[in-house]
Length: 296
Ligand SMILES: C[S@@+](CC[C@H](N)C(=O)[O-])C[C@H]1O[C@@H](n2cnc3c(N)ncnc32)[C@H](O)[C@@H]1O
Ligand SMILES: [Zn+2]
Image 1 (spheres, rainbow, N blue to C red):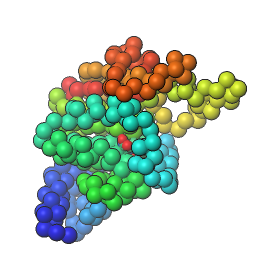
Image 2: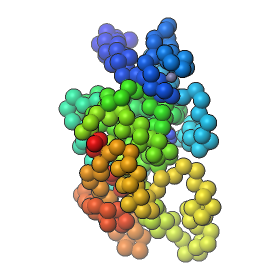
Image 3: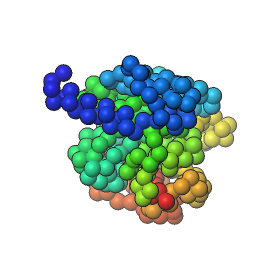
């Protein structure tokens, strides 16, 4: 490791030591050898140079375990796959998240995957930290020289109260999370006045896109909704419901943007410029919905 890289790393490590707290009980942790041990519940977390692990030791919620295992066992090149998605659409989903990261901000991405957004955020002179349960995806990020990645989950954040200026949830990572629990953790760890910006799918639009006339009864998305077999899945059927949950978790919804695209019956062509529907009514029609929230 060259000198510059080493200094960089030790700088990041000392920042980490300052902001880490037990993901389970939020108490201080003591550093012993290459692990951190919670002063209160004595849970131990292994800190290695590459990807420190902060998965809580005692997860009992089977839905959280299902999501973790689901993402741990995927076996494709995520970044390669995502570049095949319409790049104008991706730009319209990503850019509001990047926009709210301002110079010198400490930014956390929950469900960072391969930390695809980290370079754009670091280019705005922010300090980026990414957390994700999937070691497989985090390792893909490490191979691409993306640093400050941690293994953990949005429902149990391993950070002290009020340390982040901005928290983001890129490309629908909040779809797979126990929504209220994660929002409460975001409210706990965001500074007053700080931002939370995340994206979710519009369930109606997904339903319309997956609609095949021959398959009306056996439409797999519809079937999984009816049989409640989607696991943890926060697709938006009522924006009002999502707003209510956000606002009762300690945030104010400042803005809602929804991407214009993809109703097959409207035959909309993918747009080259970034255009959105605005507000709650727009969120009934847009394809991807971006919630911009501010900590009260
Ligand atoms: C569609 S990917 C998005 C990745 C990345 N944010 C991006 O913009 O490309 C969804 C991510 O959510 C992560 N995820 C699933 N359950 C999670 C949880 N409970 N807490 C945090 N992340 C989770 C998955 O591991 C996966 O990396
Ligand atoms: Zn603890």
